[in-house]
Amino acid sequence: MTSLVQPADYQLPETSIPILVQLGLTYRCNLACKHCYALYRRDRNEFTLDEIETLAGELYAAGSAAVVYSHGENMIRRDFHDAANIFAERDFYQTLMLNGFYVRSAADATRLVQAGINRTMVSVDSPDPGVHDNVRGKEGAFGRAMDAMDRLLAAGMDTVGFSCTIDKHNYDDIERIVALALDRGVHAVSFMQNRYNLRDVFDRSLWARYEQVCQTLYELMLEYRGKLDIYTHDPFMLTLLDQRLDDDAARRDFIGANLCNVGTSMVSIDPVGNVTGCNFISEAIGNVREEPFADIWDRLVSRYSDRSEPPRGACTGCSELASCMGGCKAYHYVDKYDERCGQTRFGEATAHGLAVASVDAVVPDRAPGVFLGIPRMGTRLTPDAGAPR
Image (cartoon, rainbow, N blue to C red; front, side):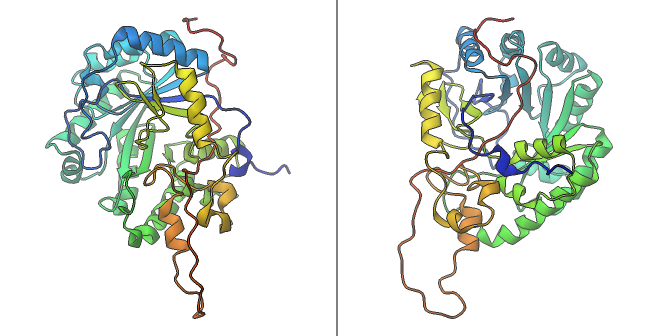
C-alpha cells in the first residue's frame, strides 16, 4: 500500500507562481461588518476597465489562473460584469465573494453566469437571522443572502456556497450552519477564523475552544464528503489530518485549502493597485500602477520565502512544524509566527516547578509561511502571453 500524501509533501516549493489572485475592484460596500479588514479603506481611486485589461494580461503572463473577487462588495461597480468578462476571455477561474444584496432578480444571477463567474460564496455567519444581521451591520442581510443563493442555484451557477467567518459569537453554531447549507442545497461551506491583523487581539483563553471547533469541522468534513464541500483556511487544521481521509485527491484538496500560500502561489491586489501577500496583511510590497506586476511578485516571494528563512521562535521546538510551517502569516500581524498557538503552548514561565533562567525570546523578523499546492486549472501549463486564447 502506498503512503498517503502529507502536508510536508507540499512545503517549500522550488518555484513560485501567483496562481491565485485575491483581487479587489472596489473597497465600497453597503454593509459595515464588525470584522471587516477593509472597513476604513474606502479609497475611490479604483482601477479603470483599461487598467483591469492591462493587469489581466500581466497576471496571465505570470501564470495566474484564478481570481477571487474580494476586498469590497464588487457588484457595487456597474461595470463589474465587464471586468469579469476580461478575465473570462483569458480562461481564469473566477470566484465572487458577495453579500447577496445585488443579486436582486433571476436576471442578476444569470448575468453573473454569463460573465464567466464559476463560484459564488455568499456571506452567512449564523443560522440565526438576528446574529447574522448584527455581525453584518444591517437588518435584513440574512434574508437577502438566502434569496441570492436560491437565485444563483436556479441560474445554474457551477458552485454556490456559504462563506462563514467564525469567532466566539458562532463557535457553538458550526453544526447548525452545516445543517442550513444542506437544507438550502448549496454545494460548499467555507469557514474562516477572523483575522484581526493586530497583535495581542486574539483572546488566548479561547484557544482550547477553537481547537474543539477545528476538530468539529474536521469531523463534519469527513461525514459529508461527496455531499457537501466543507473547507477551512487555517494551517492548524493540518495537524488534525489522519488516516480516515484516505483518498489522495481529497487529501490534496484538504491540504491545499489550509496551507498559507502567501508568496508561493497566491497574491492580493487591492482596488487601487497595492500588492500584498494576502487580504489580511497590510504591508504593501508595491503598486501595479507604478511598476510591472512581475517585478513586485519577485520581491514578494523574496520577502516571504520559507525556503531561505524558515519559521523560528516557538515553531522550532514544535513537532507539527512540518505540517503547518508556522501557521498563518496574517494572524495577527506580519513579522511573527502564528501567535495563537505559539504563545499558548509555549508560554509557561516555569516548567515542573523548576526555576528557569531568564532568556530573551527569539522574535522572528518576518512572517512564517507555507506552500499551497493548487493544481493548474484547465490545460494552460506554460502561459507565454497576455492575450486571450
